[in-house]
Amino acid sequence: MIASGVSTGPLALGSKQIESDGTFRALQYMEFYTFAGAPVAIALFLGGASYAIVKTKVMWRWLAWFGAALAMAGAVGGAAIIDGDPESPLAAIGLFTIAGALLWMLAASINVFVSKPSASR
Image: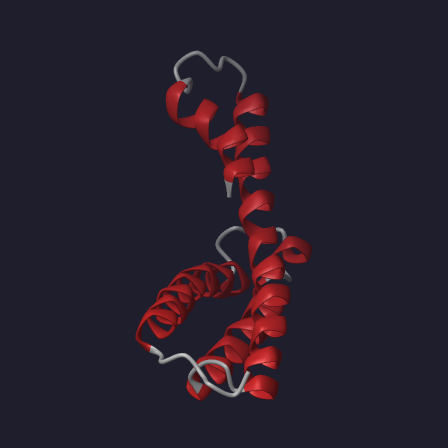
């Protein structure tokens, strides 16, 4: 997400100084492709985490299935890169994947704090 600031910053702060429409449009496309790639990374992370949760039962079971659903949505939403349309349904799925991943991380953090340590180790 930090990489998106490379294109978002100039768009937000320097839009009055950008004289060429082509430069402005190029920054908009760079921002889109930065955000469109995020669901793919989220899909890889949540897919692996969900698999580990299912195998080890280290966190709430529903967290694994929620993460797996988000991983599949991220794989579909990542296809917005191929589509190239920022207003397509694929881009919307990618945006919801990012929001869902934030909720997943919040729930995982809560699980870490409320779970009791296991004595089986």
